[in-house]
Length: 340
Image: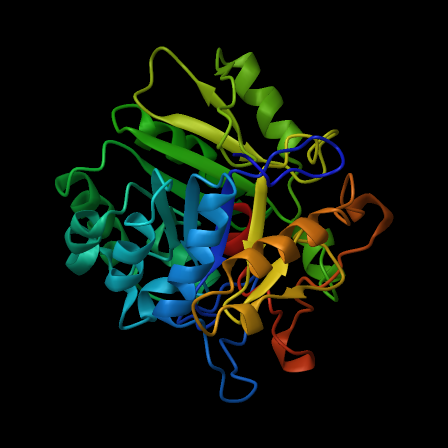
């Protein structure tokens, strides 16, 4: 029985589950000063993840994306994949990663039940990759993508946050890369969040402009499946790969919302740009709380708004950069956790 539905008849088959907020990269648009712990945190345990996933699956969720921070930093990450994949009703288990551990571990993740993988690659120029991410690991990440195909993944999704003056000139290079490779490039529009007005004004690239270029070049838009994320996906008969555009400022971006988010500390977030989370952790500590947990999910969904308020300048709890000036968001890395 499908129960995860809001007042606007949107159904939520897709859970984005963060398992840590720790990250070893220093991306310009997320953590330019690097990860700074704000105290000793206790992230969701394996048992709590099992109970949470079981409750969501019983209410109609069929897809779980495991995110962070960088999820593979958890020592029990392979066990997490196996636990989620073993949940009755869960048919797709995805992850989003910065890719630095893929070359060594992606085959193990595949065997544990991982069915889809997204990798952040913000530039195909190793020097620009280093400048954006703060890590000189371009070749390791690219080797990880090759290892994913070797492990049996038929497609790998690659995320890039496009920024004017930095990597916007990589578009042709990215397209040449996917001509013969089954990679779905996903260009994420830079968002104006918190105190990053200067960064946004300097580097924002409108996703609509990229869409216009693609359509003029013969790319065609695909229909969205019921449990797909927010990307508008385009295909071309001359290319093995695809292009996805994630444009949070686009008209009706929220109309097809089908995803809920749970942070690494066990809070439900109805929207990336919401003002608060709903604590679930007290109902995850022991068995026998599934009915109460499901009831709390129903009550929370009754308050989900029709849309975000980005156009009015309201960004809710998303990070306020730089992190040295504010506490890191409980939504963890918002580009990887919430969009990709």
